[in-house]
Image (cartoon, rainbow, N blue to C red; front, side, top):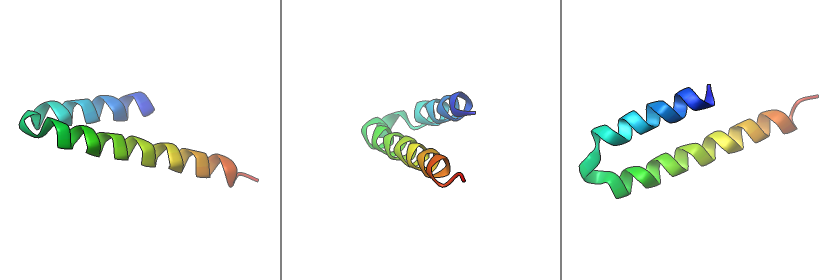
Length: 46
């Protein structure tokens, strides 16, 4: 699932090549949010 998401983000990034720097930042933020979400799920498990 993580790999699929990363691949999807990579495809999106290729579409918006002119804004590559801005897109890199957006992808980075999304990946960090995904990591935090996964961590929260792990921590809140009983």
